[in-house]
Length: 81
Image 1: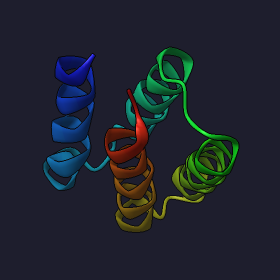
Image 2: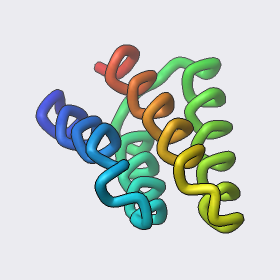
Image 3: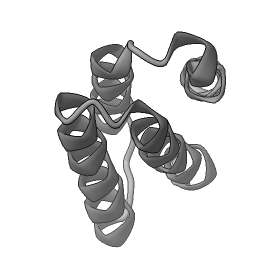
């Protein structure tokens, strides 16, 4: 499980080099959420950041999208089992 989350985190951190793959990061966040037993507040915060990132992708605000999904993945790494 840690390996999967580490891989997801590395994808998010390296995202500036691949700024236009927001949908892939959103899917990776969704996959992590489905496999982790996060607390309700953490899950709500991750979902909020994921939705904000998706909206920013649709608005072509890619630099902000990367920050949102990076925060979401950090929460999952720190809170996940």
